[in-house]
Image (tube, rainbow, N blue to C red):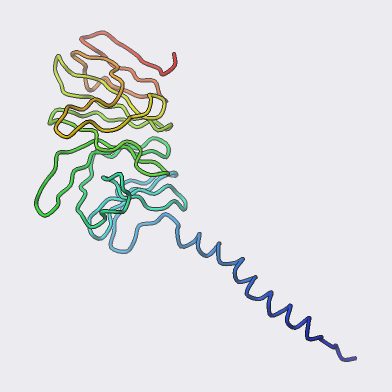
Length: 215
């Protein structure tokens, strides 16, 4: 017995073919955006949740695994200045957030270093001005950043972002850094600063202290 195929059925079958291809396309697109180190790049840090890598032009990128978009570290404009050399170090990871120090080298003009925080949605806290003695930066898994300003008897322990409050706009050019909640001031031992969850502990002039947001 011969099977008869009507013209209407044939048209329906032909119309369904492009639709099936369109349905398959998103999975292929997702595969192309998987978080990976591009050819010519190298891995800086890698966990189950994030990947930090250098590109072939020596910029540093972040992406949330497994298929997050790449985000240029060192600027709040993501990839707007991809071909300016953004140098990155002091990389620390908590969950899906990465704290780091950056500075730029644009045609030989080196700018002052800054502390930054980046997460799955982009650069969260950027351009915190730091001096030559500033250090100890810790990210938190809920998008906070803790850092130490200066050293000696006038050191300041600060926190911003996530559980510590919005960082707010940066100060005017050449003005001192005002962003962040000041947790303590004094002879803070840099080696004593620890962050567990969002609780910060430290030692100031031999006295142990602690801070928990909302407590």
